[in-house]
Image (cartoon, rainbow, N blue to C red; front, side):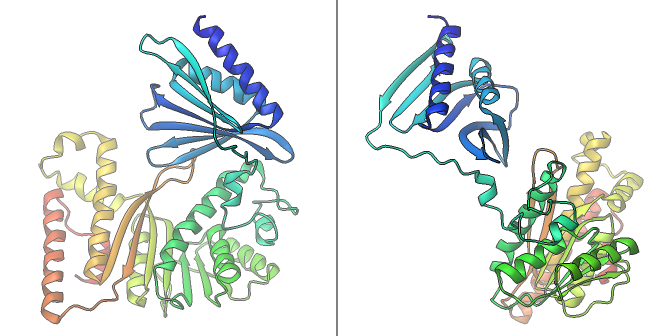
Length: 400
């Protein structure tokens, strides 16, 4: 039998197990396609809005992407992928395991074996049950045009809803690292329309049962008015939005400072405010990196990576890494443990870098602290010299 006939048999089997409820999951592996980051694909049957569908979990090296298709479309896609990109598939049903595999001559063969233990299929939609911010029962989500009044997420707001939840997941893990009761005052610098600000308040008050005060700082007065109205409507009495710039905001006691996508040196202004206030946790997702890029372009220092940075796109990426790397060093100089990692919300949102500063609890002896600061200052100086940078905006603000 040729491969077409074998695939037809497997397709009939897929139709049968999805119809009779015995499908547990499908695993596709040994990927040989063109997407270098894709590793595996997992498929299961789910029920979404009372309709039977197939949920596809594309497992990449650094992220997962989920897509939901109708049963017919899903099976057609599986067969197409097995004929071209994936060389092995394992179908788990409630009572047996079926393996489809390309041999060394690229001939497709099917084998199966009975299972000793009966498996139980789950029809739950995995991505929904993991959400920290639930789509229903929150008055602010309909007001922000994320859901309708019944709690159904609008199709054009799916990406934003996922992004909100993933940011909250990250913040929740960081908050849990701090001593209990630390987070009493939160400031979101450049809060925009307040998507994250509302969600964080919701998480802190409804799930952690904290009495945290949350403030959103936003330059656009119309958004401040809108967000304060939504906060009042949602009875979020400890949430307030104020009009102004990050640079001009008067700092007080801040435990958690957030600044997502503050452009260029506005991120430095936010970090500076957090350091000034002695914030226990500083979380920023920088945007643009123009100040350092201008420095590198103007000085044109020859170094080991000059062969790369003659290309604009590589120069841009280098400016991003150098800017954020220096920010991390400066935070360390100011007594913070730093983390820098990539955050990818989904297939349609660009990659973001999060720079996180957690205030160090341990105190070093005076001499050891002095030596630590000297070493960091040397790294900062050496880095600036290597890339031809006369100053970094954050160090200028701090006067170091």
